[in-house]
Length: 203
Image (cartoon, rainbow, N blue to C red):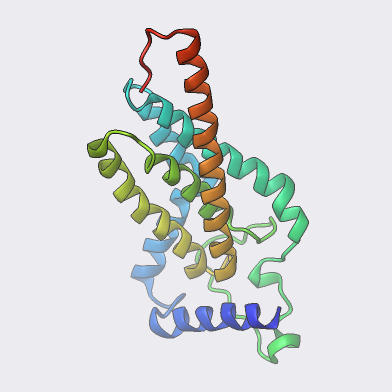
């Protein structure tokens, strides 16, 4: 546990030293906006909904939305209650380090548990679905900017100090798992549909 906390503390210290977190109005506003894009996975749900209008992208749009749903349900109902990790601003840093924890007032403090990062998992889950799009042109057009967005949303949670860096790493792992589960569900559903209606082409 000490090794994990040392890692988290050092990453927080790096962001404060190099990026001047909380005292850099430009970056503070940029990352506050980026982190808001991940709220409730709404931007990914919107992307998935738009994909439904394209027949060749429709199954993967469903997978995108399923990934977000799995993230919300499994994180909040199972994983977060299991680990019960307090947020960085609620952890007793003085007793561990002898120093107070710095919390920049960039966004409002969330009142939920910390591990894993929901913003991160609900970004990487739909991202995985985008990387499974069979059409190469569509896959790269959506998945490459999607990867950048997911990475920025994950890092923004560290920047604004509402998640430990290890929460974000855990969110990436969880998100990949949720995304793969969503893809498997959609592929299974497509197979059943094609078996029932062999003349139809969904993908």
